[in-house]
Length: 499
Image (cartoon, rainbow, N blue to C red; front, side, top):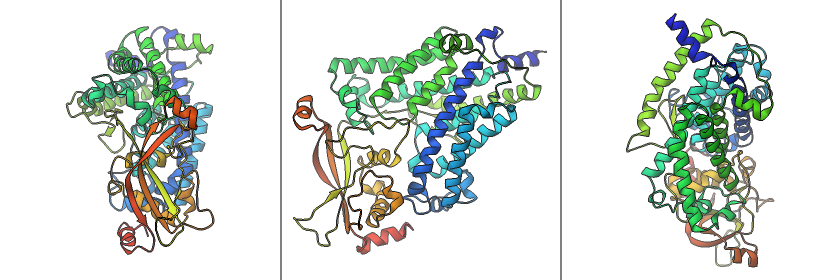
C-alpha cells in the first residue's frame, strides 16, 4: 500500500482537482511544440549550408572524427543532404502535430511516440551541428523535450512528478545563470555590466539602442534586479502556492524584458514556457477562461514508468547540481551525449567594446590603393551603420550569431571562416542564402578579405544628424586578401577536405 500511495503521489494531481495540472500540461506541450517548430524551420533553411555535404562544417567529415556515442543521431545512417533535409521537414510535420494538439488525441503511446521522434530528430541536428548548434538553448530544448515524451495525452492524468522535474530545470537554468555572473565578470559585482550589455550583446534588436541610452543609475538597478531574479526568485519554484506562482510571474516578466531588448534566440521564450509549471489549473483557468479537460485513471505501467523516470533523472542530476556549487562552474555543458540533464548559464563575462568582422570582396585581380572593396551584409548582425538593428527572435540566424564570437579571436580560432571565404569566392548559392546581400551577383569576386571594426551605438545627437544607428572605427585587418589562386590557401582547404 505504501508503494501504491507513493506512485499515486508522484504521478497524479493534488487531491484538490482544481489544483491539478491539466492546463499546465497543455501550455507546456503547446509551448515546447512551438519551440521545436522554430528549431526545425531553422534546420530546413540553414542546416545544409552550415553543415551539409558542401557546408561550412560538413557532417560527413565530422562523423569521421568521432564515435556514435560522442555524437549520437540519425545522420550516422545517412549524412546526405537529402536525408538531412527530409529529417528537418519531418521535424516540422511532427511539430505541427504537437502544436495543433492532434498528437494528444490518440492515446498516451501515440503522444509519446510523436514527442520521442521530435526528440530523436532534433538530437541528431544538435549533435551533428558542431559549433553552430553548441548553445545552451539547444540542449535546453532537448532536456525539456525528453520529459515531454512522458506527459501523456489529454485523457491521462498529468504526471505531477514531471511538473516538478520541469521546475528543477527552471531552477538550474535561472540559478545557474545567476551564479555564473557572480563568479565571472567583476562588472556584475560592481553593478556596471548593463552599461555595456545592450551595445555588445550578440545581436541587438531595434529597442537595444534605446535601452543602452537609459541613465547609469537605471542600469545599476537593472543589475540588482537581475541578481534578485536569478539568485533569490528561483528558490520559490519549490515552495507552496502562491509563492511558486509569484516566482513564475517574476521570472516571466524578467524574460519579457530580455525579449524586447535583444535577440537571444528562443532562450527567453522557452524559459517563459517552463514557468507555466509554476501554475496549477485553478490559476490558469481564471486567466485563460479554459476548462481543464477531463481524464481517466493512469495505468499501473505508466505510474511505474514515471517513478523510474523520476529516479533516473534525479541520479543524472547529481553532476549538474554539483556544478552549480563548484568554484569552477561550467556554463552550458552536458554530462552525457543525449543531453538529458545539463548545466546552464549566460553572460558570465560582458565585453566592453563591440568588435565586428566585416567581410569584403573585390573583382580586381591586382590589389592596390584604388581597389574597390564591396561589403557583404549579413541578415541581422550589425554592418551598414544606417541599418536599423533587426528583430529575429525566437528565430535565429546562426551564421550571424557565430561570427560575433569570431570577432573576439583571430580567424585561426574559427577555421570555418576560411571555408566561408572559399564559398564566397565561388558564389556558392546555399552559403549566400545565409547572407542578406551578394555584392557580386553576376560573377564571383577574385579576392575576399575581412576587416575588424569597433562598433558603438550612436548618441541621440549623432543619430539625429546622420541617421546612423552605429558609429564604427577600423581596428585592424582580420583576414588577409585571399583568392582561389593562392596556393597556400588552397593547401589549407585541401587539408581540411573542404575541396
